[in-house]
Amino acid sequence: MRTQVAIIGAGPSGLLLGQLLHKAGIDNIVIERQSGDYVLSRIRAGILEQITVDLLAEAGVGERVKAEGTVHHSIELVFANTRHPIDVHGLTGGKVVTAYGQTEVTRDLMDARSAAGLTTIYSAGNVTVNDFDTDHPVVRYEKDGQTHEVLCDFIAGCDGFHGVCRASVPEGAITEYEKVYPFGWLGVLADVPPVSTHAIVYANSERGFGLCSMRSLTRSRYYVQC
Picture 1 (cartoon, rainbow, N blue to C red):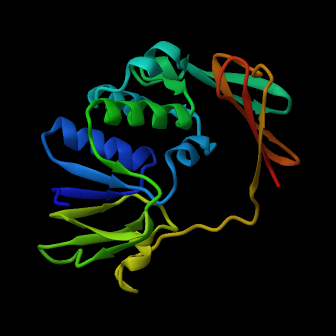
Picture 2: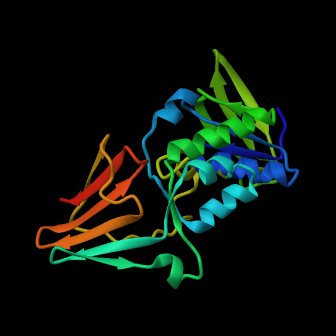
């Protein structure tokens, strides 16, 4: 196959890039090692900042997040068991954050790609990126017992930290900046109404940090430091 941009990874970043390229008239193919059902089953983040919602609208996939997302005009900081509301909307000139699951963003992008008849290859095995530092990059993958090639002008590595694209870059070509904290987070997803339907709640106590967020009006996401 031949395309202008071969995108590795069908998560939100790869699908959104594909949608933006399509809107700009640039041909692209998305290649994903997992199945479409697997991609949709992954539970990830659920809070979208204003710039992301605006970008989804620009890409033509913002209707459902506008209709079904829960808008937060403020946040709450909790110290010494006292909640302090912070007017994000007023302090930023009208910006808000929106509770809308990443799974739903992915679904919207997948539906838009399917409706436009764009090529997405799921369950691609043994994906390799070749000659990406030349004028003639090639992506190879296996599917249904056969090896396939995608010739392209550019390869976009949207397959994350553990993906094949990062692993294919020569050692020393990537500069890392990392801050390692001596603790982690325990995340809990529960089918219960959120603590607050209008704000994310950030709490600090002698036992560390906690966060009360939401995915919908009936599903909550909590984090505690550990």
